[in-house]
Length: 204
Image (cartoon, rainbow, N blue to C red; front, side, top):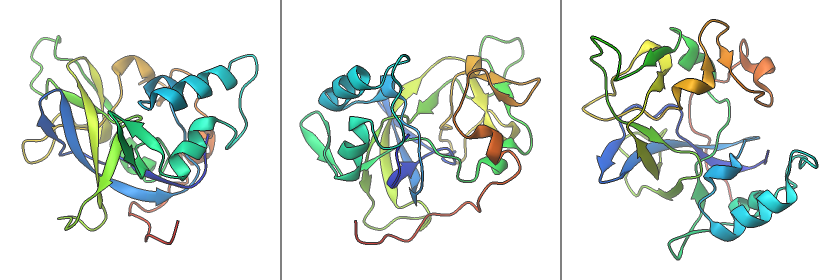
């Protein structure tokens, strides 16, 4: 877990596919966030973080090396350093739970939703010069998957011909409306989500 500015793509429902990537317009928020260590694309930050933060010796908030890498704009992917990184936080999470998430499985009989979805964990992001949506001033280069996924807000189809930023089907317990694994802080947000909007940018 880290604190500070990051990109948040959980509300991105119109990502544009671009080869094996998807360009997602995302929120810019300043709050505690969670980094999935296996998704870190900066090779050095990933190696240092996985060496320091283990199941036996977990890191406390802001102790993971990747937190510093993100905070100071040193996140490097393909020899390019990025000021913004897509990580996970609970901003606007209540909107994703209403209506309840559904299973989007292209292998199911009669399925009519999208085949592809965007995985934005650890994705590098850039500021958009003239964003069409002022609340989403960041563009993140997310990976694309063609596997079953969770349909946030009861939908399996993106907006305007785009695809949804989501997470894999196995990660969600539809019966209990929760994750299938321990997710830090989730017990506090089910009934207390913040309004969905981007934070104003202040000097970093």
